[in-house]
Length: 154
Image (cartoon, rainbow, N blue to C red; front, side, top):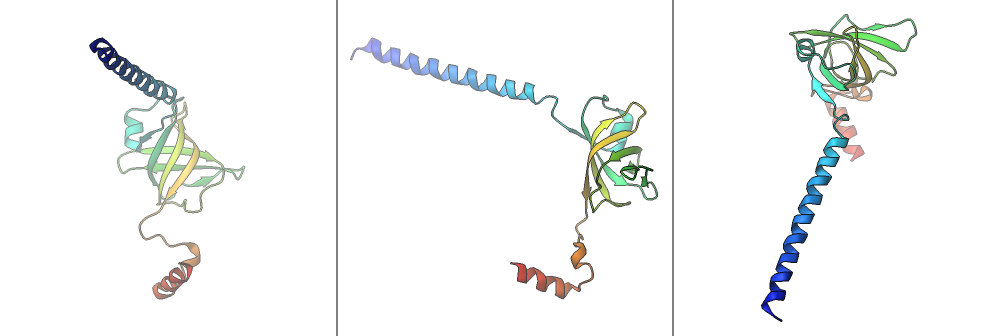
C-alpha cells in the first residue's frame, strides 16, 4: 500500500461526509418548505385584535369563553360565542359537535381562520379544564368513594 492510496481513501471519506451533510441540509429545507403552510400559530384575543392574521392562514385562538356570549343558531348546529383574555374580545363561529367540557367561563382553543368580517371561523374546538376536573360519573361521589373507584380500576 502506498502513501497515495491512503490519502485517496481519506479524501473519499471527506467527500462522502460532505455529500451526507448536503443531503441532510437539503432534506431539512425541503421538510420546512413543505410544512410552511401547515403550521398553526397560536394567538390570544389581544394579539388577533392588534395584528390580525390573513384570512387564509390557519391559526389557533386561545382564551376564555365569556359568560353570556354562547348562542346556538336556528340550525341547531352552529354556535357563536366570544373569546376574551381580559384585554380584548374576539367573536367566534363554530359549526359542528361541541366538546362536552365546552361551557361559558371555561378555557378554549379554537382552530380555524379569521373571516373577512372580523369573526373567527373555527373548524375545531378544544375545551380546556382546570386542575380540579372531575369526570361526570364521579361528580356526586365523595372523595373517599372516588379514591376507591380509582384503586379498583388499577
